[in-house]
Length: 298
Image (cartoon, rainbow, N blue to C red):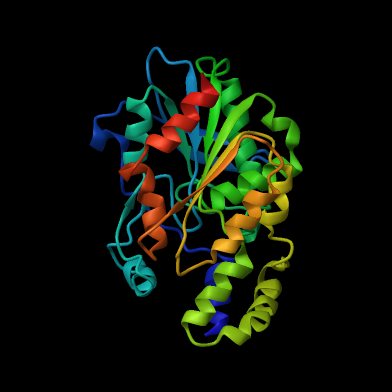
C-alpha cells in the first residue's frame, strides 16, 4: 500500500482537459508558451475587450486548467472515500472573472493536462512547478496585448505552493504583480499524513517519506510552502475548508502567519469536510475574492 501511494504521489497520473471556455460562450485562444526552463505549457487566453486587467490562473495537483472529472472513473473511486467524488469545473471560474472585467490566462502546470513532461515526470510540490508560474508571467509581459496590464494571480493548491516557491526562487519576477488569491495551499507531509490516518496507518508516515525520496530525491522538508510563504511579496488572500479531512487548519494558518506583507487575509469555509468544496467556493461566493482583485488591481 505504501509503495502504491508513493508511486501515485511521486509521478502524478494525468487527467484530461474535458471542459472548454466555449461551453460558457467565451471567446478564447489556445496558447502555448515556455516555462522558465523551456518546458512547453498549454493554456487558454480568454480576452475581455476594453479591460486593462489580467488574472493568471493555475490548478491543484492532479487537476488541469479545466478542473478534475471526479464524477467519472477512475478519479471517482480515488476521491469519493474522502467525500470528494464530485466534478470540479474550473471553466466556471473563468466565466465569473470574465464577467467581472478580467482577461484570463489559464494553463496546465508541467506533467499535467496537455503541458510538457519534465524532470522525469516527478511531482515536486512546487519546486519545479515554480518555473511554470514564472513562465506564465513572462508570457503575459511579452504578449503585445497584455504586456502593459495589471496582473493578479489566482493560484490553487499546488499552484499556490508553486507561486510561493517562485517568489522564493525568482523574486524579481513578481515586481509589479498586484495581488494573489490562493485557495487551499497544503504541505505534502500534512496531506499525506491525513491520507495514511484515513487508511488506519498513521504511524507509517516516515516509511512513506523514505519511499517518496527513493522515487524523487525530494523529502517532505524540502517541499515546504510554510517556509516559502515567508517570501510572499504581494497582497494575499487565502481561503481553506476549515474541517477539510485531507489537512489540518494549522497548516494553512502557519502559512498565513508566515506571510510578511501587511495586506493579507485568511477566510475559512465552514460546514463541510470536503476539500473540493474549497475549490467550488469561488463559484458559490465569489464576492470576497473579486473584491480583493478589484481593490488591488484598480
